[in-house]
Image (tube, rainbow, N blue to C red; front, side, top):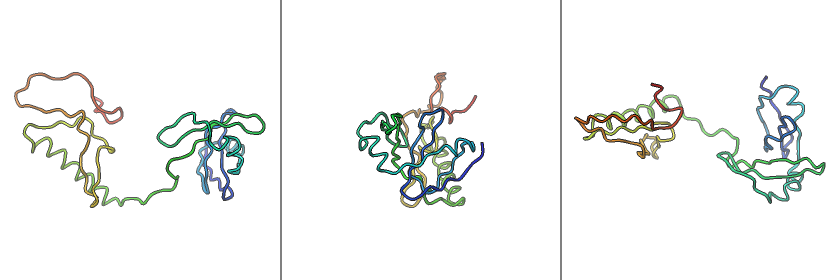
Length: 173
């Protein structure tokens, strides 16, 4: 599969069909697609009025997720569709410089170092991931979400064998 750039007309909605099932309908001025050439050529462009008619003005909600709400619709030819309305635009937000990213990582590391060596008793976070590092108004990192944290008491002999944390962020050992 090759990446292909689709540049529909303003006010146009691009849909992607895979095996006659609608994957998404997205408002887009520039949509980067990783579909094959054949699939890209099969992409259709709809006016908002067509989508309004098909969904009866987004009447029947059939699901939702991290990126938006999904509505049921039926085209004039009888084809049933699912239309996802994105909660955030697909535009790229202001990026953070690499220097600032390193400063954020250093702040987070200092926070964890403090939990491990500066606190009495020591605190083991057990769920360290990017979404648990918050930034203040000065872009200084703060470690958050201590729901799975544990106190490491000196002289304790019990070792927990229960795995805790977020898949993908756990130590593989």
